Image (cartoon, one colour):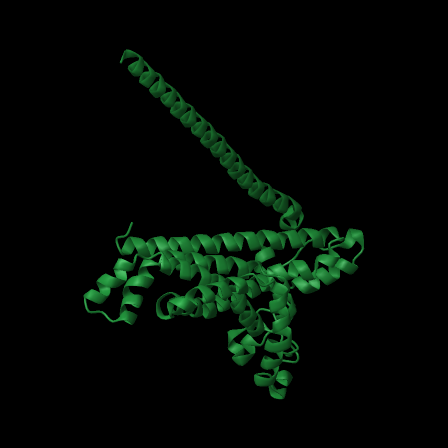
Length: 343
């Protein structure tokens, strides 16, 4: 009897020691994994900081000469051309990118105005209105569209969108009216907005679908039980509950739109004009140049120190603009939540 108790105690002791050993091993693995993740997080943050420092250091020359005028004045195209052909001691260090900034903001905001309502509507159809057997297929298609390279959208813009604009909106009278300002050939702000909206639409749809699917089903069931129609339940219950995820999709789409270069350089005309709303139809048909496209289009002239500094300055303005827009979106979201008593 005593031998049996002793054996049982020994077995329990061995089992307990094994459990303790497993716990110590798990804690050790967790500690190592935590330190690795912390290290990678710090390195990622430092990398972003170093990128900012590098770009600012490279653009210091043009900012020291141009000052605030770099973002409040125009004439970037002519300034780059003059600096490229000038002698080394006669290069201009004064540039103005207001036209480029206006082109970036107008194309981005125009694309968001088109893509966000379409994206939310498409997400609602996929998540709430389509049959179950089609939802997985449609979500896979949307994610494949989001992975299409931007240059393919640029080709579609050149072969489809620009000819459509030229045949539909550009007339001989309009060309003669604006011939002293720019050449109206279909490459325009409107073409950039249409192509850019097609590019960011899959991103907004994909994140909106995920946000809507994350809303507890009991919300919809409770709304229907109270007598609301299915569509009213979607508008009044589901979408407000998913607005944080939808807003994240809009912000991500805005980031891609602001940073897009290749596709827009193929369809917007590549000239740093500021579209004038007083021109009516000519406002949307004005050729523009964005900050990201300017970096690509003018990169062949980076052998000139002043142009190199100006292009890095474009990068600084682009980063700051994207950051300000993202922060502004979050501030608006916080203000809305606070007014509704959610924070």
